Amino acid sequence: MSTICAVHRALLTGRNAFHTGKTRPRMSNLVPQLFSCFKTVNQRNVHSIVRTAAPLRLTAKSMTGRSCQLLTGIRKSATQATTPALPAYTQKAIGWWLVGCSGMVFGTVVLGGVTRLTESGLSMVDWKLFKDMKPPGSQEEWVAEFERYKQFPEYKYVNQQREMTLSDFKFIFYMEYAHRMMGRMVGLTFLLPAAFFLTKGWVSKAMKPRLAIYTALIGFQGFLGWYMVKSGLKEQPKPTDVPRVSQYRLASHLGSAFLLYSLFLYQALNHLLPANKLPDTHLKQISRLRGMSHGVLSAVFITALSGAFVAGLDAGLVYNSWPKMADRWIPSDLLSQYPAWKNFFENPTTVQFDHRCLAHSTVAVICGFWWMCRKAPLPPRARLACNCLLGMAFVQASLGISTLLMYVPTHLAATHQSGSLVLLSFAIWVAHELKRMPK
Image (cartoon, rainbow, N blue to C red; front, side, top):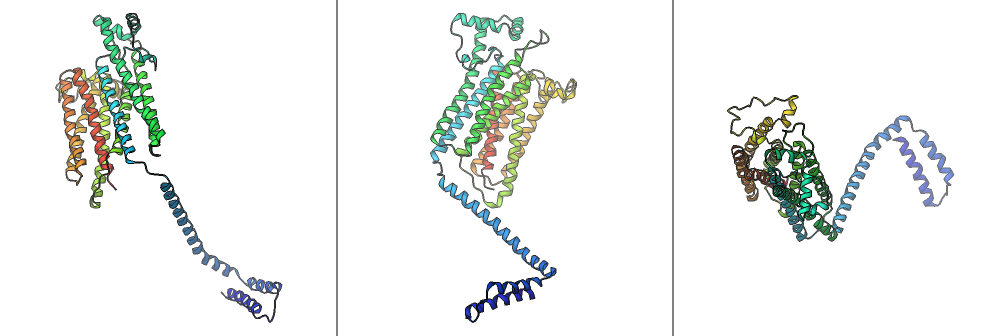
């Protein structure tokens, strides 16, 4: 402290001399005096000054960090101000377009289920993007297509049971043809309006990556479809084996379609439905329900995916009784294959047992979720979604039991598959209603 006072006195003396004009000391006279003052500073004084300056340095850093945050906020606000908000009608247009895309996917999935149930999926033995769009026109073209089909295992197996005529072949061909054309229509329904909206500048910055994901999923879905069909065109180990596509590829094909449908529908709801509002006193309860809604959605999706393994292995024809399986709660051949993990994917008995257990669990979870929603102060639209979810869960369970007891008739099985998509739609709606509530 004494050193600092000495420095101050030296500077003060020089300043007074300049102002009074009595003496005009040169800078060379002041430098030795200042130097002598600093020379007396010991190590303890230096450490004291450093310790004193440390809080000032931290304060300066804190102020610098806050200044950077403030500048970042100002920059973002300026960016938002310079980027004009999209008109409401553009968001509505995109929302209804996505609803149409999800509806097209819904129809394609239903038609694909009917194609599988009528055993029509292997009637077109090759895949060409543009050539497949024109079916055979003349009698000669139909005969040539039929002869090509006769070279593959499905015809050989079916012809052992009954003679297949050209008229029979035309029916299964048109079923598969309609399914493939429906898939192409999904692509056109998505891509053409997407290009229009992008050109008009109606697509927000956050929406553009989603459009890229949807495009990739549509292309991947087409690839999976042909990859699945190829697995059913291979020669079977035994002449008595039923030619069928791989259940793994079938589950992948159906699962990707369900995923694409879910993304379309959820994004459509984002554009069409306004946000719900709740009082701040119930945010914790709503947050708990929001997490449960995601669990319900996952349960519905996994149960539907297990149904693809049931369809791929014709497991619905194994035990046609309910609630027991051949008068037993646990069938004797549940783990008959080795290694044990294969039973869950390749043993028809285990696959049907798993699907039953998942279906029962999903209905129970939905009932519990609905009961908790009754005690929550939900808006009317969210409560309506929960009620629809519960009602559709029982309808879907009834359809599944009826399909099983009646030995899988085509109309009931197709309705049951469609019901899984409807149930998934209600689960998406509920999750969306709860997510839109402010935290």
